[in-house]
Image (cartoon, rainbow, N blue to C red; front, side, top):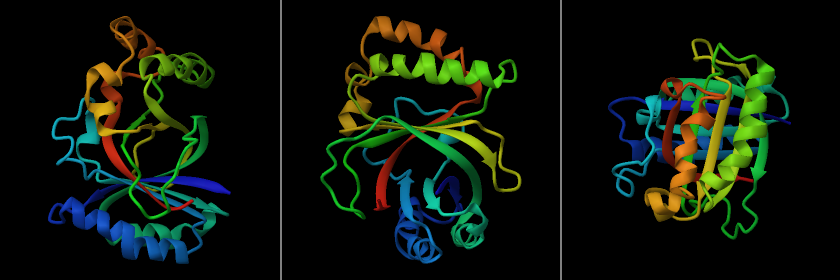
Length: 228
């Protein structure tokens, strides 16, 4: 099975709630009918709950939704992208390999219902100054353990390494990350989001080892698991 992450931007005249509802309704039905095995939509519909996101960077300010699909074969993705493009002005698709260093072990809500809490969603390219070996060592072997200190109340951590860009014109990126927090307050309150002042002082030094902050994109999203 192969996983694709689609980053989507709505048409300017379409409210985010209408775009979200289309993805959760008729678009999701078409994706599942086209052979999608698992499906998750993460939508940028939290302005009412998080008017001032604590970490809001780059194109995260304009992203409308991320759509995660699992297929038997990426050769069958054409109808999926066609369905997304009927609602979106821009669709960037990436084949990824998924790792879950921290899994939510106590899910108790059904498919289709909005997940509790919030996802801090981030994506970024590999800096040209780094080789693949240096990039993945710093991101996986150094930053991932540190991130447990940085966000002690984090609920889940899904780490996607980009293997291929699938859609024409999509920017070249190498990492797509979703960090789940159990409540909105765990994310918006700096005292709960971060472990300590000492850990915060180490953030930039740690991040510089695998990413250029100017090229990073991030935003809070709500999660809807439509088929698990």
